[in-house]
Amino acid sequence: MTIDITPARKLTGTVERVLKTFEEGFETKDVEALDLTFEGIPGDRHAGVTRKSGGREPWYKRGTEIRNERQVTLLCPDELAATADAMEIDRIDPGWIGGNILLSGVPHLSYLPARSLIFFENGVTLVSYGMNGPCKFSGAAIGKRYPDKSGLDLLFPKAAKRTRGILAWVEKPGTVQIGETVKIRMEEQWVHPGA
Image 1 (cartoon, rainbow, N blue to C red):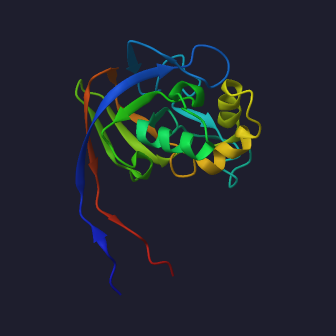
Image 2 (cartoon, rainbow, N blue to C red):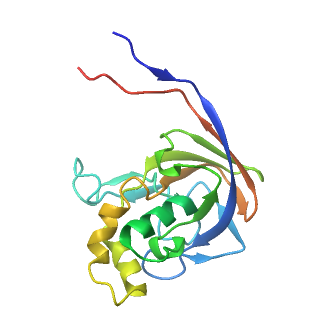
């Protein structure tokens, strides 16, 4: 049996915006810089070394304590624009859907493989957990901005499938600033052939 292997590769991007939560809920707001610890973003809704399992982990009883791989959400402008087009709206702001880092220059960011290393110019390193699954709560947040359009809450999970960005956890803490260069290292990739 032959397995196709794509060699390791490197990409480069730029931090366009940094955001975090300040209140209840998941929407984020712009900040000057984003301080990251091993727990993620201090004070952010998704901060913590561990978290409680939910509907995305049906193999665990809901509320089971598990490793928090959802500390940071990275999005890209191209995918946000494509999702907005699919929803027939003019734009989607990353803050509406809980984004923490808006990263330009990395095409198809959502397809960045799990375990990819994301090195920020000022020293922070994130590890990609993989693609973020879109949900109706983000769709409802978008719908609040377009009260004349109904059904956006349910349309978003379909329109944003595979364009919802990635989740990551902090491997090396520090501060992320707007304008920083980001270097991404992807490991070799392959598709397991199954049994």
